[in-house]
Image (cartoon, rainbow, N blue to C red; front, side, top):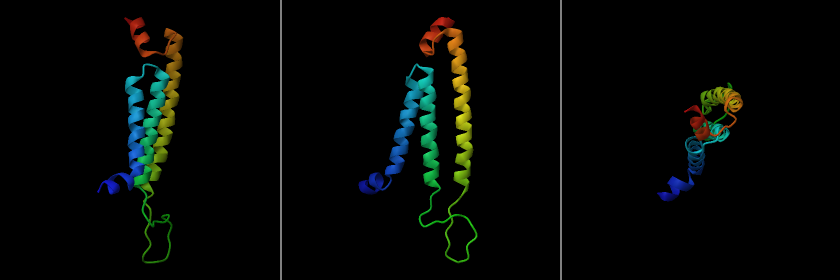
Length: 119
């Protein structure tokens, strides 16, 4: 039971660990760049998780092949992840641009110092 739960699904445990590391970085860190890095780690873990779900044992590419016992891999998760990667890169670029503007305005990228300067 434990062997099946832990050892057979080790990739899912890795993804959950990466998600928690990214979530911790977003929540606990005061540095805005570290928050963006944590967000990227979190999104990468989600991408890896969805790609692993889309895998079919013994599956082949969804190209027309003659035969009755052909099992295809579902291409939809892979396409969605490509779109997600583009969105993630865009979010990172906008976040880093905003961090540059925040640094120019406040002279720091530490969240607690920015909040002190605002009040």
